[in-house]
Length: 175
Length: 147
Image 1 (cartoon, each protein chain N blue to C red):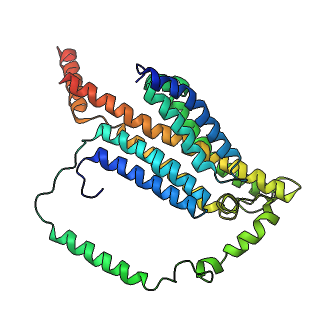
Image 2 (image 1 turned 90 degrees about the vertical axis):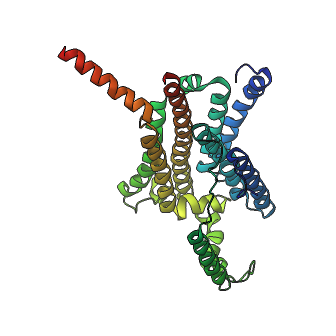
Image 3 (image 1 turned 30 degrees about the vertical axis):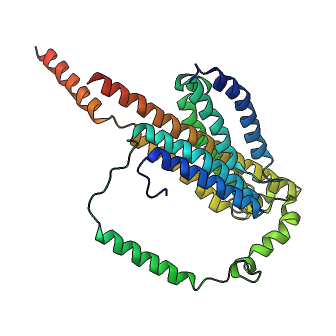
């Protein structure tokens, strides 16, 4: 439904509802940290930012009239490859899956003794895996700076007018 | 939107509560779900709600855009500084054990300091993003008004 919609405002709203449902799902699965992140980032701030973008861009998606065969082929091939890859995945929810056997038990067993805090997620994020989180912080900073450098370029009409002003001033000076 | 009385009154009640919840998520993140990232987003949401109700000018009176840019760099610097502090005290980068004599307290101190850096960066970057888009809208309105 989100894909079929041409009205971008409505699809932003539907994405927000989808994120909120995901947050509810994570709460049911007892993943409090992920649920909080999904609710605040997915349903909250990213919807807000999408609406802020829509205030600058057009509200309706440009309809594509002709069929794009190359896109269809790329999508089908990628989808088939991904489906084929899922057969290799371990069965869902088994306690002896690799993700539960590798280093997770170490973190879960030692968080309380090493750090004295009950939230293992915070311990992994900020302490055991601090290098990942510092990268994350730098990514966010870079994203902010990138948007700043893109959006502070003068819009086309304004640029022309400014150049016109400068030329007029030069002519005055010459006169 | 400040002409709508209901929005204004509700926002007046909600904004302090959202900020308080953001601070709770920030500083209680090691005990309960939460952390710097979520707290920063929640805190920025309070400011964005303020801007939606009272306008961008009033929002910049609360926190000027220049201060946002300084603070978002400060957040990353707090994180990196915490890491370097461990190096100065003779351990690896981003290892918190040597900060205090009690290793558990030292780790908690490190986590809180690192999360503070993340929260500061995320909150100010979100504010900057929103204010940049709002300013762009104003600029486009001016340009189309002149033509």
